[in-house]
Image 1 (spheres, rainbow over the protein chains, first blue to last red):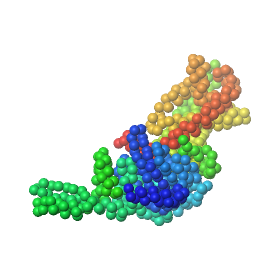
Image 2 (cartoon, helix red, strand yellow):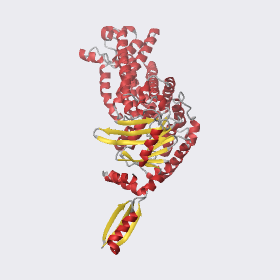
Image 3 (cartoon, rainbow over the protein chains, first blue to last red):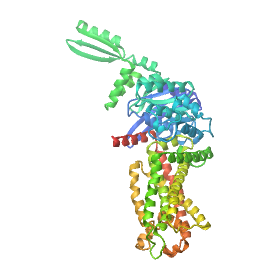
Image 4 (cartoon, rainbow over the protein chains, first blue to last red):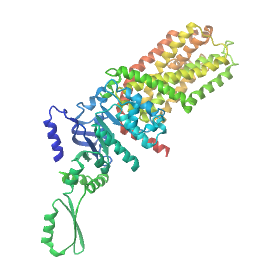
Length: 316
Length: 292
């Protein structure tokens, strides 16, 4: 995998390990019982980068992010987050992280300002947390600062979740499926908020199963499927690499043929050389990133791994 | 295996977390006092006890002409403290584990320590307030309660030690249940203990083995301790051993405190280690299914 190799190389050049990269993951493996969820995940994220971990449901995104957050023990592999192993991170380390959790009904009786001011106090021995009112304004909850959390709408609650995640002005922010269950409006507002955070040089790792979201938010997209990272690059890079795959369709004597190929032009030339005028209804279509990703997701969710492998070959 | 929760005790930011925890306890107590449903949860049982004691006013403690209602008041206060420490702590831990409050604490530097300190403060605060809700009106209703300087001292140490003995136990039980609706199971044995702990009637008439069981539980000793503080000394005659047995009261409650202080952090750490976003999501899904 070209891009992964690049990353590895970069990590090797930047010794001592972890001086530049905020996140470094090498050959991360996770096994639950006899099921392998992660079979060797490797990637890195530099300071200030916004990285999206993209993949179908059940691909291991949440497992990966929870290992990085220090909430889950890994089975094997090397992981470094802000220069420390998350499995042994201390409270000083934790103070540098922000984790956006999905609220449900916790702290329902607390008022928005009260909760943010309270949670901020835990960070004061380590760093300078946001002042509650300032933070409330950043996430656009000023009108609701005096409300009880249980009275907030779903969208407002998510803003509060983000506010809680960043109250300690984290160097690294984790967002796990941040817009799951959002309507388009709330989603756009949330994307704006993430852009604002990215501008403030916070490193962000988010997971999503939505390619569109990954393209909008991330500097770099990692596609996780079948337990490992099968593609790694900017949306542009991935699309360009992807577009080398083409689908050629034609008919001979009324019979339909479909062939996927990386080199469409020589293939078509050969096709004509062999069959000449018998070739009819010729169609050559470049697959878009989305097509390829969708076929992979369908294949993966249908329990097939060939689609993933095909995808892997294409992105190589 | 060490995890970020190792900062539960000790380390940088601990002093701040203790202060944050105290603030958290104060804020949560205030929330309870300003939330109608919560307040009713405290007032309603108090009303029931007051009615029960009003009916018992005419009856007398067997072998004396002392009001059974007046004997019941301190026992009920003792039981209330045990309930606060055990049941309130257990339920709120089970609920706040399910709803993600604990995970938020885990994601915050020294947040678990702050959370636990806050829980101790708010449970202790609400338990004491709830007992006052019974005690103050009952004083106007019942005759025979007597308290002197020694009684005040006894009252203080029994209340404090009683909370120390029961709170960690409640926290332990609370962390054993990932589903708060299952936590109700623990109510059955607790109610059973109340029945045999001499809260509403002296237990001298009960079979010896049942008396022995009762004397292991902190509920019995809390009831006895409160009676010793609030009743005339001659009523010790109807107790087991015809004495208030302060030494034994202190011993048993202190023993439970030691057990709790040693075992609870281990159980709590184990529980906290397992908390993650996906475990909360799972529980949310389960709870949602139950509703729909």
